[in-house]
Image 1 (cartoon, rainbow, N blue to C red):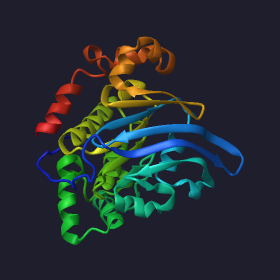
Image 2: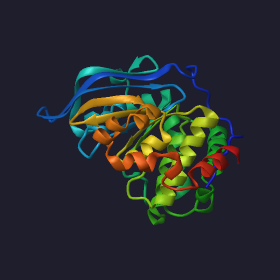
Image 3: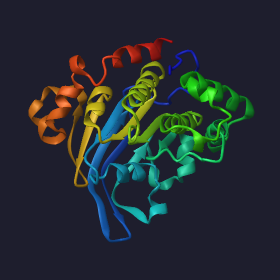
Image 4: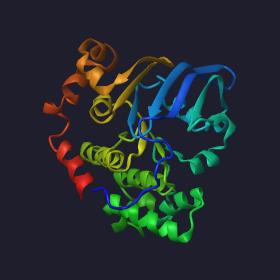
Length: 287
């Protein structure tokens, strides 16, 4: 599975390094009773990968739902704070408008349409963006260049594909919208380690070759420390630690306290999850 650096992507409207997403002190309640998060702040500089890390129930998914303005469907609402994407208050934009603006989320659990073929699923992303037939064809070939396996399975029903292939479909469908900020909720969940490695290598390649900004919620702290530029740790609905992945790796006490001692060893480049990770990234970028 390789990523192509030769297929053009929509250029970001903000120069690399500017703040694309700014979340300040948000709180979220479900059913007017359940406090899911109480004080979360984070920012995503354009052209970077930021990872939300925390245990189950820490508030990662709720934070992403708030950023994508998806809470209303789950009887949730933001009760404090504000999220801005490219300077715009996300609460004032419908989810469909956010997609057209370039903020696109891959939900936890992949959520493919099982009765549709792989290609039909991908084309729903083009429909969400309002792409022309010509743009849709170009974007489809781009996705097939990134995930060659999907081209092989293009006429297979998505419900009959593997978990890894369904995750590729979900990411590919998001890429069909030409996102400027790609948000992923637990993309490693339920997948084999080699599939996880390949998917994260592709994400890193897209970031490196095209400047795609990425926000990932990930329970696997080793993956987050390995691939992200910035880390935000959530605990009981609050952000308790934020900084560059390198800073957190080098501060062993903080890492052991918030992320667990195992993360230190597994995120170290000399003892990485898989010795092929670096070569996989290089191959993905340069192929």
